[in-house]
Image (tube, rainbow, N blue to C red; front, side, top):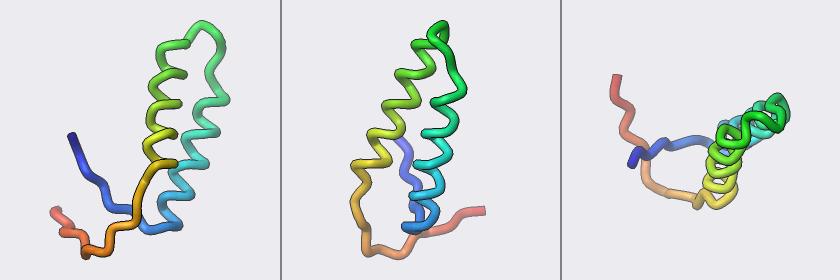
Length: 57
């Protein structure tokens, strides 16, 4: 499992991008649509973390 720290603005941008990405797939890509919906659900369930992120790189 990976953890990514996003600001509220970055979270909203990511959520909107995933919604747009989801709308580009047709019925033939049901597996991709299911994975994208799973990611969107995780983004919607994101909780506020008051810790400062450690940035590597």
